[in-house]
Length: 436
Image (cartoon, rainbow, N blue to C red):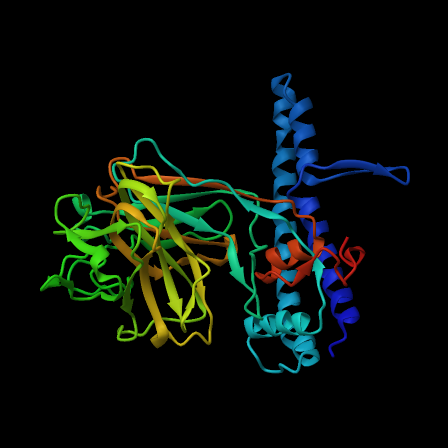
Protein backbone atom coordinates (compact mmCIF):
# COMPACT_ATOMS: atom_id res chain seq x y z
CA UNK A 1 0.00 0.00 0.00
CA UNK A 2 1.29 3.51 -0.77
CA UNK A 3 2.50 5.61 2.14
CA UNK A 4 -0.43 8.04 2.21
CA UNK A 5 0.93 9.86 5.26
CA UNK A 6 4.08 10.86 3.38
CA UNK A 7 2.17 11.59 0.17
CA UNK A 8 -0.23 14.00 1.84
CA UNK A 9 2.42 15.58 4.04
CA UNK A 10 4.24 16.61 0.86
CA UNK A 11 1.05 17.61 -0.99
CA UNK A 12 0.03 19.57 2.09
CA UNK A 13 3.26 21.56 2.04
CA UNK A 14 2.72 22.43 -1.62
CA UNK A 15 -0.87 23.40 -0.84
CA UNK A 16 0.30 25.73 1.94
CA UNK A 17 2.94 27.29 -0.29
CA UNK A 18 0.49 27.99 -3.11
CA UNK A 19 -2.00 29.46 -0.62
CA UNK A 20 0.68 31.75 0.79
CA UNK A 21 1.67 33.01 -2.66
CA UNK A 22 -1.98 33.53 -3.60
CA UNK A 23 -2.66 35.39 -0.36
CA UNK A 24 0.34 37.64 -0.93
CA UNK A 25 -0.23 38.36 -4.62
CA UNK A 26 -3.94 38.26 -5.34
CA UNK A 27 -6.10 38.55 -2.24
CA UNK A 28 -7.11 41.66 -0.32
CA UNK A 29 -6.05 40.60 3.18
CA UNK A 30 -5.06 42.22 6.43
CA UNK A 31 -4.88 40.45 9.78
CA UNK A 32 -2.89 40.64 13.00
CA UNK A 33 -1.09 38.07 15.12
CA UNK A 34 1.97 37.81 17.36
CA UNK A 35 2.07 41.58 17.58
CA UNK A 36 2.41 42.02 13.82
CA UNK A 37 -0.03 42.92 11.02
CA UNK A 38 0.10 41.13 7.67
CA UNK A 39 -1.07 42.99 4.58
CA UNK A 40 -1.20 41.44 1.14
CA UNK A 41 0.17 43.33 -1.85
CA UNK A 42 -3.37 44.02 -3.04
CA UNK A 43 -4.31 45.40 0.37
CA UNK A 44 -1.27 47.68 0.33
CA UNK A 45 -2.25 48.94 -3.13
CA UNK A 46 -5.75 49.69 -1.88
CA UNK A 47 -4.45 51.63 1.11
CA UNK A 48 -2.08 53.67 -1.05
CA UNK A 49 -4.96 54.61 -3.37
CA UNK A 50 -7.13 55.57 -0.37
CA UNK A 51 -4.65 58.08 1.04
CA UNK A 52 -2.77 59.33 -2.03
CA UNK A 53 -5.68 61.00 -3.79
CA UNK A 54 -6.21 64.38 -2.14
CA UNK A 55 -3.83 66.58 -4.13
CA UNK A 56 -1.70 66.48 -7.28
CA UNK A 57 1.48 66.13 -5.23
CA UNK A 58 0.05 63.05 -3.52
CA UNK A 59 -1.20 61.53 -6.75
CA UNK A 60 2.34 61.80 -8.10
CA UNK A 61 3.27 59.11 -5.58
CA UNK A 62 0.82 56.63 -7.02
CA UNK A 63 3.88 55.11 -8.67
CA UNK A 64 4.03 53.09 -5.45
CA UNK A 65 0.87 51.29 -6.59
CA UNK A 66 2.62 50.35 -9.83
CA UNK A 67 5.59 49.04 -7.88
CA UNK A 68 3.31 46.87 -5.74
CA UNK A 69 1.55 45.62 -8.89
CA UNK A 70 4.91 44.58 -10.29
CA UNK A 71 5.64 42.78 -7.03
CA UNK A 72 2.37 40.88 -7.33
CA UNK A 73 3.30 39.80 -10.86
CA UNK A 74 6.65 38.57 -9.59
CA UNK A 75 4.84 36.58 -6.91
CA UNK A 76 2.62 35.05 -9.59
CA UNK A 77 5.82 33.95 -11.28
CA UNK A 78 6.81 32.13 -8.10
CA UNK A 79 3.57 30.16 -8.37
CA UNK A 80 4.51 29.12 -11.92
CA UNK A 81 7.90 27.90 -10.74
CA UNK A 82 6.32 26.10 -7.79
CA UNK A 83 3.90 24.37 -10.19
CA UNK A 84 6.86 23.01 -12.12
CA UNK A 85 8.33 21.72 -8.87
CA UNK A 86 5.02 20.03 -7.98
CA UNK A 87 4.73 18.42 -11.43
CA UNK A 88 8.27 17.05 -11.12
CA UNK A 89 7.49 15.59 -7.69
CA UNK A 90 4.37 13.89 -9.07
CA UNK A 91 6.26 12.41 -12.03
CA UNK A 92 9.17 11.23 -9.87
CA UNK A 93 8.48 10.58 -6.18
CA UNK A 94 4.72 10.03 -6.37
CA UNK A 95 5.01 7.86 -9.48
CA UNK A 96 7.58 5.67 -7.70
CA UNK A 97 5.33 5.35 -4.64
CA UNK A 98 2.45 4.25 -6.89
CA UNK A 99 4.56 1.91 -9.07
CA UNK A 100 3.90 4.17 -12.05
CA UNK A 101 7.44 5.16 -12.97
CA UNK A 102 7.73 6.68 -16.42
CA UNK A 103 3.99 7.32 -16.75
CA UNK A 104 2.71 10.72 -17.92
CA UNK A 105 1.63 13.15 -15.23
CA UNK A 106 -2.09 12.59 -15.91
CA UNK A 107 -1.70 8.82 -15.60
CA UNK A 108 0.12 9.14 -12.28
CA UNK A 109 -2.70 11.28 -10.91
CA UNK A 110 -5.33 8.81 -12.12
CA UNK A 111 -3.34 6.06 -10.40
CA UNK A 112 -3.48 8.07 -7.16
CA UNK A 113 -7.27 8.28 -7.52
CA UNK A 114 -7.55 4.52 -8.12
CA UNK A 115 -5.22 3.65 -5.24
CA UNK A 116 -7.12 5.86 -2.80
CA UNK A 117 -10.43 4.26 -3.74
CA UNK A 118 -8.99 0.76 -3.49
CA UNK A 119 -7.51 1.51 -0.05
CA UNK A 120 -10.56 3.46 1.25
CA UNK A 121 -8.55 6.66 1.63
CA UNK A 122 -10.35 9.98 1.30
CA UNK A 123 -10.10 13.72 1.83
CA UNK A 124 -12.68 16.26 2.96
CA UNK A 125 -15.37 16.82 0.34
CA UNK A 126 -16.40 20.04 -1.35
CA UNK A 127 -20.18 20.39 -1.58
CA UNK A 128 -20.89 21.60 -5.12
CA UNK A 129 -24.06 22.70 -6.88
CA UNK A 130 -25.30 24.05 -10.21
CA UNK A 131 -28.08 26.58 -10.59
CA UNK A 132 -30.73 26.37 -13.27
CA UNK A 133 -29.73 27.00 -16.87
CA UNK A 134 -31.19 30.36 -17.87
CA UNK A 135 -31.86 31.15 -21.54
CA UNK A 136 -31.38 34.79 -22.48
CA UNK A 137 -34.66 36.55 -23.17
CA UNK A 138 -33.32 37.79 -26.53
CA UNK A 139 -32.49 34.32 -27.89
CA UNK A 140 -33.65 33.76 -31.47
CA UNK A 141 -33.71 29.98 -31.12
CA UNK A 142 -35.31 27.52 -28.74
CA UNK A 143 -32.50 24.95 -28.52
CA UNK A 144 -32.75 23.29 -25.08
CA UNK A 145 -29.51 23.41 -23.05
CA UNK A 146 -28.63 21.03 -20.22
CA UNK A 147 -25.66 21.09 -17.85
CA UNK A 148 -24.61 18.35 -15.41
CA UNK A 149 -22.08 18.11 -12.55
CA UNK A 150 -22.22 14.32 -12.71
CA UNK A 151 -18.84 12.61 -12.91
CA UNK A 152 -17.53 9.07 -12.62
CA UNK A 153 -14.75 8.04 -10.27
CA UNK A 154 -12.07 5.42 -10.93
CA UNK A 155 -14.42 2.65 -9.79
CA UNK A 156 -17.22 3.98 -12.04
CA UNK A 157 -19.34 5.30 -9.21
CA UNK A 158 -21.44 8.32 -10.12
CA UNK A 159 -20.34 11.28 -7.99
CA UNK A 160 -20.50 15.06 -8.00
CA UNK A 161 -17.54 16.54 -9.84
CA UNK A 162 -15.75 18.45 -7.09
CA UNK A 163 -13.82 20.45 -9.66
CA UNK A 164 -16.90 22.70 -9.76
CA UNK A 165 -16.01 26.14 -8.40
CA UNK A 166 -17.76 29.42 -7.66
CA UNK A 167 -18.29 31.03 -11.03
CA UNK A 168 -20.78 31.95 -13.71
CA UNK A 169 -20.65 29.91 -16.91
CA UNK A 170 -21.84 31.42 -20.19
CA UNK A 171 -22.73 29.30 -23.22
CA UNK A 172 -22.91 31.42 -26.38
CA UNK A 173 -23.62 30.74 -30.04
CA UNK A 174 -20.59 31.57 -32.21
CA UNK A 175 -21.54 30.23 -35.67
CA UNK A 176 -24.99 29.82 -37.22
CA UNK A 177 -26.73 29.06 -40.50
CA UNK A 178 -27.90 32.56 -41.30
CA UNK A 179 -24.49 34.23 -40.95
CA UNK A 180 -21.93 31.44 -41.36
CA UNK A 181 -23.72 28.81 -43.50
CA UNK A 182 -23.48 26.24 -40.73
CA UNK A 183 -26.00 23.44 -41.25
CA UNK A 184 -29.19 23.98 -39.30
CA UNK A 185 -29.03 21.78 -36.23
CA UNK A 186 -25.22 21.92 -36.17
CA UNK A 187 -24.76 25.44 -34.81
CA UNK A 188 -21.58 26.04 -32.84
CA UNK A 189 -21.45 27.29 -29.26
CA UNK A 190 -18.65 28.29 -26.91
CA UNK A 191 -18.80 27.26 -23.25
CA UNK A 192 -17.12 30.10 -21.37
CA UNK A 193 -16.35 29.61 -17.67
CA UNK A 194 -14.90 32.53 -15.74
CA UNK A 195 -11.88 30.39 -14.84
CA UNK A 196 -9.97 28.39 -17.44
CA UNK A 197 -10.16 28.01 -21.18
CA UNK A 198 -13.35 28.09 -23.24
CA UNK A 199 -14.60 24.86 -24.83
CA UNK A 200 -16.45 24.57 -28.13
CA UNK A 201 -19.51 22.43 -28.70
CA UNK A 202 -22.22 21.97 -31.32
CA UNK A 203 -25.96 21.53 -31.24
CA UNK A 204 -27.08 17.88 -31.28
CA UNK A 205 -29.14 17.64 -34.49
CA UNK A 206 -32.35 15.75 -35.03
CA UNK A 207 -31.96 12.98 -37.59
CA UNK A 208 -34.58 12.51 -40.31
CA UNK A 209 -34.89 9.30 -42.29
CA UNK A 210 -31.87 7.15 -43.07
CA UNK A 211 -29.34 10.02 -43.05
CA UNK A 212 -27.01 9.34 -40.11
CA UNK A 213 -25.17 11.93 -38.04
CA UNK A 214 -21.57 11.59 -36.85
CA UNK A 215 -22.49 12.33 -33.22
CA UNK A 216 -26.18 11.63 -32.75
CA UNK A 217 -26.39 7.84 -32.76
CA UNK A 218 -30.17 7.75 -33.19
CA UNK A 219 -31.27 7.14 -36.77
CA UNK A 220 -34.53 8.80 -37.80
CA UNK A 221 -35.23 10.41 -34.47
CA UNK A 222 -38.05 12.29 -36.22
CA UNK A 223 -39.87 9.07 -37.25
CA UNK A 224 -40.05 10.07 -40.90
CA UNK A 225 -39.26 6.74 -42.59
CA UNK A 226 -42.10 4.22 -42.66
CA UNK A 227 -42.93 1.27 -44.89
CA UNK A 228 -46.21 -0.61 -44.78
CA UNK A 229 -47.24 1.01 -41.52
CA UNK A 230 -43.97 0.08 -39.75
CA UNK A 231 -41.08 2.40 -38.97
CA UNK A 232 -37.96 1.58 -40.99
CA UNK A 233 -35.49 2.23 -38.17
CA UNK A 234 -37.52 1.34 -35.11
CA UNK A 235 -38.87 -2.09 -34.14
CA UNK A 236 -42.05 -2.72 -32.19
CA UNK A 237 -41.09 -5.37 -29.64
CA UNK A 238 -44.63 -5.45 -28.24
CA UNK A 239 -47.88 -3.52 -28.47
CA UNK A 240 -47.33 -2.38 -32.03
CA UNK A 241 -50.92 -1.16 -32.22
CA UNK A 242 -50.19 1.78 -29.89
CA UNK A 243 -47.45 3.19 -32.16
CA UNK A 244 -48.19 5.10 -35.37
CA UNK A 245 -46.87 7.95 -37.48
CA UNK A 246 -48.42 11.38 -37.11
CA UNK A 247 -47.95 13.92 -39.92
CA UNK A 248 -50.07 16.74 -38.51
CA UNK A 249 -48.83 17.43 -34.99
CA UNK A 250 -45.07 17.28 -35.54
CA UNK A 251 -41.95 19.33 -34.87
CA UNK A 252 -39.33 18.09 -37.37
CA UNK A 253 -39.31 16.50 -40.81
CA UNK A 254 -42.40 14.88 -42.27
CA UNK A 255 -43.81 13.17 -39.22
CA UNK A 256 -43.45 12.13 -35.61
CA UNK A 257 -44.33 9.20 -33.38
CA UNK A 258 -47.83 9.01 -31.91
CA UNK A 259 -48.36 6.79 -28.88
CA UNK A 260 -52.08 6.08 -28.41
CA UNK A 261 -52.92 4.26 -25.19
CA UNK A 262 -56.15 2.36 -24.62
CA UNK A 263 -55.65 1.66 -20.93
CA UNK A 264 -54.96 -2.02 -21.58
CA UNK A 265 -51.99 -2.40 -23.96
CA UNK A 266 -48.31 -2.01 -23.04
CA UNK A 267 -46.06 -0.91 -25.90
CA UNK A 268 -42.32 -1.25 -26.48
CA UNK A 269 -40.57 0.39 -29.46
CA UNK A 270 -36.79 0.03 -29.78
CA UNK A 271 -33.84 0.97 -31.94
CA UNK A 272 -30.77 -1.27 -31.81
CA UNK A 273 -27.60 0.85 -31.92
CA UNK A 274 -25.22 -2.04 -32.58
CA UNK A 275 -24.65 -1.07 -36.21
CA UNK A 276 -23.58 2.47 -35.52
CA UNK A 277 -20.44 3.53 -37.40
CA UNK A 278 -18.32 4.70 -35.72
CA UNK A 279 -19.21 2.49 -32.78
CA UNK A 280 -20.65 4.16 -29.68
CA UNK A 281 -18.08 5.18 -27.08
CA UNK A 282 -18.43 3.50 -23.72
CA UNK A 283 -16.89 4.93 -20.57
CA UNK A 284 -18.31 8.41 -21.05
CA UNK A 285 -21.37 10.53 -20.31
CA UNK A 286 -24.09 10.71 -22.97
CA UNK A 287 -27.00 13.11 -23.37
CA UNK A 288 -30.49 11.78 -24.18
CA UNK A 289 -33.30 14.10 -25.21
CA UNK A 290 -36.66 14.20 -26.98
CA UNK A 291 -39.50 16.58 -27.74
CA UNK A 292 -42.91 15.50 -26.43
CA UNK A 293 -46.46 16.77 -26.85
CA UNK A 294 -49.34 15.54 -24.70
CA UNK A 295 -52.52 15.64 -26.77
CA UNK A 296 -54.64 13.97 -24.12
CA UNK A 297 -54.06 12.14 -20.88
CA UNK A 298 -56.10 10.02 -18.50
CA UNK A 299 -53.74 7.53 -16.84
CA UNK A 300 -50.40 5.68 -17.05
CA UNK A 301 -47.15 6.94 -18.57
CA UNK A 302 -44.84 6.95 -21.58
CA UNK A 303 -41.10 6.55 -20.99
CA UNK A 304 -37.96 7.05 -23.08
CA UNK A 305 -34.75 5.39 -21.90
CA UNK A 306 -31.87 3.11 -22.90
CA UNK A 307 -31.37 -0.61 -22.56
CA UNK A 308 -27.72 -1.28 -21.70
CA UNK A 309 -26.88 -4.98 -21.83
CA UNK A 310 -30.58 -5.63 -21.29
CA UNK A 311 -30.77 -3.40 -18.19
CA UNK A 312 -32.76 -0.17 -18.09
CA UNK A 313 -30.64 2.98 -17.85
CA UNK A 314 -30.73 5.10 -14.72
CA UNK A 315 -32.00 8.02 -16.82
CA UNK A 316 -35.65 7.83 -17.85
CA UNK A 317 -37.58 10.61 -19.60
CA UNK A 318 -41.15 10.26 -18.38
CA UNK A 319 -44.44 11.66 -19.69
CA UNK A 320 -47.27 11.33 -17.17
CA UNK A 321 -49.96 13.29 -15.43
CA UNK A 322 -47.49 15.95 -14.31
CA UNK A 323 -46.52 16.81 -17.90
CA UNK A 324 -48.12 19.93 -19.34
CA UNK A 325 -50.61 19.30 -22.17
CA UNK A 326 -51.15 21.00 -25.49
CA UNK A 327 -47.58 22.17 -26.08
CA UNK A 328 -44.22 20.85 -27.25
CA UNK A 329 -41.82 20.33 -24.35
CA UNK A 330 -38.27 19.06 -24.34
CA UNK A 331 -37.15 16.37 -21.91
CA UNK A 332 -33.46 15.59 -21.51
CA UNK A 333 -30.73 14.37 -19.23
CA UNK A 334 -27.41 12.57 -18.92
CA UNK A 335 -26.48 8.89 -18.75
CA UNK A 336 -23.10 7.28 -18.17
CA UNK A 337 -22.29 4.25 -20.33
CA UNK A 338 -19.87 2.07 -18.31
CA UNK A 339 -16.59 0.95 -19.85
CA UNK A 340 -17.84 -2.63 -19.93
CA UNK A 341 -21.27 -1.84 -21.33
CA UNK A 342 -20.49 -3.21 -24.82
CA UNK A 343 -21.73 -0.52 -27.22
CA UNK A 344 -23.17 -3.23 -29.50
CA UNK A 345 -25.69 -4.00 -26.75
CA UNK A 346 -27.21 -0.54 -26.35
CA UNK A 347 -30.75 0.12 -27.49
CA UNK A 348 -32.95 3.20 -27.41
CA UNK A 349 -36.41 2.43 -26.09
CA UNK A 350 -39.84 4.11 -26.03
CA UNK A 351 -42.53 2.34 -24.05
CA UNK A 352 -45.92 2.92 -22.51
CA UNK A 353 -47.43 1.22 -19.50
CA UNK A 354 -50.39 -1.10 -19.95
CA UNK A 355 -52.63 1.39 -18.15
CA UNK A 356 -51.60 4.31 -20.35
CA UNK A 357 -54.69 6.05 -21.65
CA UNK A 358 -54.11 9.08 -23.81
CA UNK A 359 -52.22 10.40 -26.83
CA UNK A 360 -48.58 11.48 -26.70
CA UNK A 361 -46.51 12.68 -29.65
CA UNK A 362 -42.72 12.22 -29.64
CA UNK A 363 -40.24 13.86 -32.02
CA UNK A 364 -36.53 14.58 -32.23
CA UNK A 365 -35.25 11.67 -30.12
CA UNK A 366 -31.48 12.21 -29.85
CA UNK A 367 -28.53 10.54 -28.11
CA UNK A 368 -25.03 12.03 -28.29
CA UNK A 369 -21.89 12.35 -26.16
CA UNK A 370 -22.03 15.26 -23.75
CA UNK A 371 -19.36 17.92 -24.13
CA UNK A 372 -16.99 17.87 -21.15
CA UNK A 373 -15.47 20.95 -19.54
CA UNK A 374 -13.17 19.18 -17.05
CA UNK A 375 -11.63 22.22 -15.41
CA UNK A 376 -15.13 23.54 -14.65
CA UNK A 377 -16.45 20.17 -13.53
CA UNK A 378 -19.43 20.20 -15.92
CA UNK A 379 -20.85 18.42 -18.98
CA UNK A 380 -23.04 20.26 -21.49
CA UNK A 381 -25.58 19.23 -24.12
CA UNK A 382 -27.55 21.50 -26.48
CA UNK A 383 -30.33 19.87 -28.51
CA UNK A 384 -31.88 21.10 -31.74
CA UNK A 385 -35.08 23.09 -31.43
CA UNK A 386 -37.68 24.14 -33.97
CA UNK A 387 -36.11 27.62 -34.21
CA UNK A 388 -32.40 27.81 -34.96
CA UNK A 389 -30.04 29.78 -32.68
CA UNK A 390 -28.11 32.74 -34.06
CA UNK A 391 -24.65 34.11 -33.38
CA UNK A 392 -25.25 37.61 -34.78
CA UNK A 393 -26.05 40.39 -34.21
CA UNK A 394 -26.81 39.28 -30.64
CA UNK A 395 -25.63 35.79 -29.78
CA UNK A 396 -28.06 33.29 -28.31
CA UNK A 397 -26.83 32.69 -24.79
CA UNK A 398 -27.41 30.55 -21.71
CA UNK A 399 -26.10 31.28 -18.22
CA UNK A 400 -25.78 29.24 -15.06
CA UNK A 401 -24.09 29.71 -11.71
CA UNK A 402 -21.85 27.04 -10.20
CA UNK A 403 -21.02 27.00 -6.49
CA UNK A 404 -18.68 25.18 -4.14
CA UNK A 405 -18.39 25.51 -0.38
CA UNK A 406 -14.64 24.79 -0.79
CA UNK A 407 -14.68 23.00 2.55
CA UNK A 408 -11.72 20.80 1.70
CA UNK A 409 -8.28 22.42 1.56
CA UNK A 410 -6.85 19.34 -0.19
CA UNK A 411 -9.73 19.16 -2.65
CA UNK A 412 -9.35 22.83 -3.57
CA UNK A 413 -5.62 22.28 -4.02
CA UNK A 414 -6.26 19.18 -6.19
CA UNK A 415 -8.69 21.16 -8.34
CA UNK A 416 -6.46 24.19 -8.71
CA UNK A 417 -3.03 22.59 -9.04
CA UNK A 418 -3.55 18.98 -10.13
CA UNK A 419 -6.66 19.43 -12.29
CA UNK A 420 -8.43 16.50 -10.64
CA UNK A 421 -10.82 15.67 -7.82
CA UNK A 422 -9.56 13.16 -5.29
CA UNK A 423 -11.81 10.62 -3.54
CA UNK A 424 -13.65 12.34 -0.70
CA UNK A 425 -16.09 11.52 2.05
CA UNK A 426 -17.86 12.89 5.10
CA UNK A 427 -15.42 10.95 7.25
CA UNK A 428 -12.07 11.59 5.57
CA UNK A 429 -8.99 9.58 6.46
CA UNK A 430 -6.57 12.38 5.51
CA UNK A 431 -6.35 15.27 7.98
CA UNK A 432 -7.03 18.72 6.60
CA UNK A 433 -4.49 20.19 9.01
CA UNK A 434 -1.72 18.94 6.71
CA UNK A 435 -2.78 21.47 4.07
CA UNK A 436 -4.04 24.36 6.20
